[in-house]
Image (cartoon, rainbow, N blue to C red; front, side, top):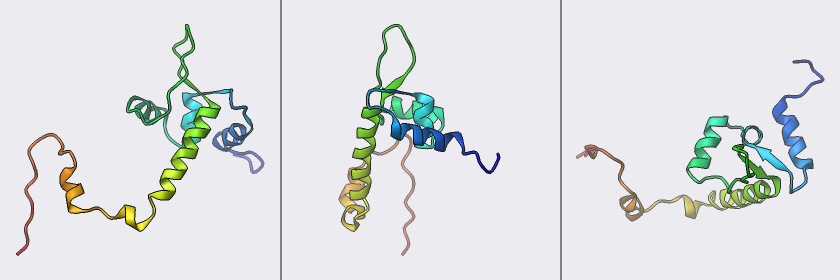
Length: 113
């Protein structure tokens, strides 16, 4: 890469900042924006971790409105900021016991006497 050029990721982030709220973002562009692979964004979408996508009639392409992505990112910023407080980082024993156990046989606990 030449010294005067920038990477496509930085270029899209700059472009995203200038886009109108009604513009659309494809799954590849969203992956660049989030610094993720396309596949991980697909998994996030499947798991409901992304805002609802825009359904264009007659097209199978997955896209989002820029305004929706900006709102979603703003909400995530608020959650991440609140989660760094020491009170929310402490986990009680009752919270751990209430967590759903994974599939399979429970692991043996190592007890030190």
